[in-house]
Length: 393
Image (cartoon, rainbow, N blue to C red; front, side):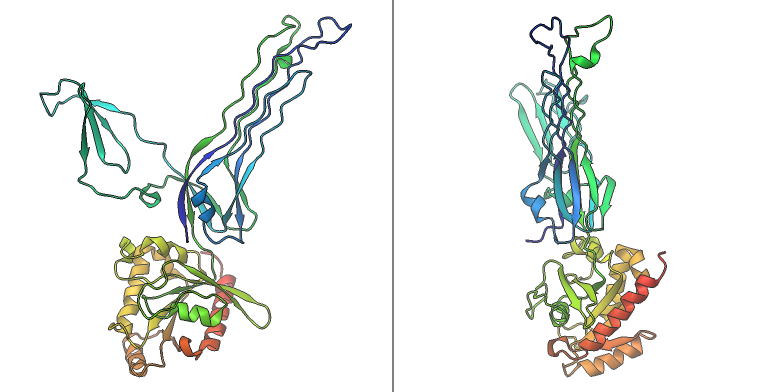
């Protein structure tokens, strides 16, 4: 299972309370206050890890709760601090702060039904049906006009807190509460036996949205059944499912391309885009965001037109979807690769494509038979090197 977006609840540990104690020892009368301080609460820390590729861990453990600090003790002994909770997430994870829960209930002045004498309350929620309770019998009215699923993708993103892109980078999601001071800290010349101490402070808490955007050197973009998974299998040890029907790949696949001189490139196979993907049609926004971090984009076209579409129409539609989703994507280096050149109609379609789409270099390959794959490897290596050397805009 591939999870790239998940809502989590984080709560740091509470600080331990200070102690009220007095020093008691033989032959030491009135030893004075000796209450220790409480320990601080543990922090909730997110740490980027390149060994992870999705948020499956947070899917099964969405509540991130750190350990609270222990209370202070007598004889001036401070309580131990709570242990920090370090949660590992994949590199490329964005952390969004979600708005706090639903708004409080507010009375409505106008009554829709005169037979109900009691006040009517509206419970406003961001993504739930409208609920109304009224009268002594607590009549319930449910407005189901909008049949929408409630999930992580329906939540409105709030403030962007962090972008964990490098291995080992840490971000304190929730800071632990400070421990309370013991009564020994409040002793003065005029108040030599204080009988009070501070309680520990509560730790930070809140709801957050973790969003993964895969970091890769090359992003393979194309219509369903264009041969992206076949190409990824030919150039790397990745083994995605391959079948002759659209939408075989349902989540992004990552492949590591290794060269003879030990140079490595990361290639991301983004699931097939269709018309209207920028409006979340098909897989839509679920995976379009994964190409935003790629250094170069490769448009893989089915030059044989096996699904009844013209390759030049696919090319224009793909560029249109990328621009409508994020115009900055067209500023990345884009390369066109014509796949399935082993089919009889591919040669003629390639000639028509070059006549219709001018000033565009096309690399013909047949990934299923390993034809042109070596040239493809050289092309993307040089392209990634040029993109890395170019100054950031």
